[in-house]
Length: 222
Image (cartoon, rainbow, N blue to C red; front, top):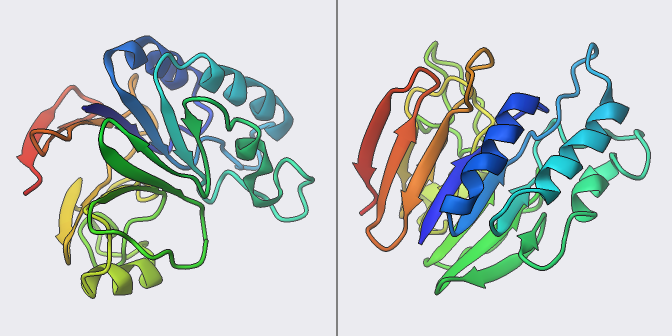
């Protein structure tokens, strides 16, 4: 089973068009949060029209979790608790809070800032933030933007087998083993023509990271 793992697309039209173009080659597309960009200079109403339309044109099963840019308290029903993402739920589209099975594997879409969820050891999570104190949650300069509760859970050996994350744009590494959990974070280079992404082969337990400059780095997940 082949997965295309992206995160932090931030309403980049070119990146979403690339995702649609690439999607037929995969069994599942996972987007780990921050599909929108809540920066003050970005028109949110326009994003709420364009981004869902892009997602409806993805030509593969789709799993999405919300990130910190996908909801806005007091922003209306569609932005409160990332309500606009809930609207996308349908056949072959799983969103915040959904557990599902596909190709013999168990998945779960974990919402941004949700309460800690009990993990099965064979699960694969789509979750925006990596755990804290991991190379996927710490930037190259040393600051830690990972999630503390998630870190505690994973370090206690209570996490899933695999966590497909994002949030930290310039992580120290795109992969880390925390407890029993492999954590993958493709990172984000805002000026890249293509989004950074990771191809995951679940049967072979292998992943390949693709950087914005065309760099590739393979790794095992055992």
